[in-house]
Image (cartoon, rainbow, N blue to C red):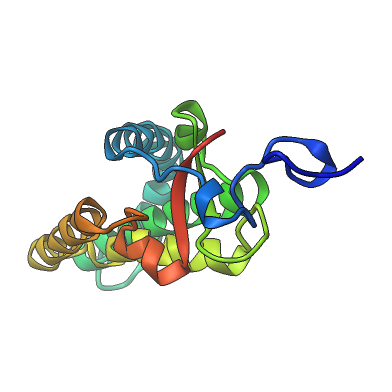
Length: 184
C-alpha cells in the first residue's frame, strides 16, 4: 500500500518526526508547557521529600560520629542540592528517551522531540543534556546568593521560549537540540 496523504511509516498518522516542514507538528503552547512543568514539580517534590528523610538520618548519624561535632550547614545544604539535582535530572532521563514525555507532559498532551532527524524519541544523551541544563542550577542551591543567580537563569531559560520562533525552544531545548510539541 502506498504511503501518502500525510501518513507515516506503517500507514499511521504522521507524528512530525521526519515530516516535511508543512507537516511539522505545532510547537506546544507555553501555558500547557507551564502546566506540565507544575505537574512534574509536584511529582518530583513528592519523590524528593521521600528521599529526604533517609538523607537527613544519614547526615545526622554521620555528623554525630565526627570528633568535631555535626556536619556543617554547607555540607547539609550541598547534600540536599545534589539530591534535588539527581532526582530532577534522573526524572528527565528516565521518561524522555522511553516515552517522549514526562508524566506532566503526557497529561497535558505534549511531547519532547528532536529538533532534527527522523527519530520519534530522544536519545539518552539528548535527554541527559536537556536535564542537565534544566536541573543543573539546583546544584548551586547551597547558598542564597548563588540560588538567586540560579533563579535568574531559570527566568532566562523560560523567557527564551517566549521569544523564540518558530520552535519556542527554552535554553535547555537549545542545548539538547529538542523542541516541545503538541501530541497529534
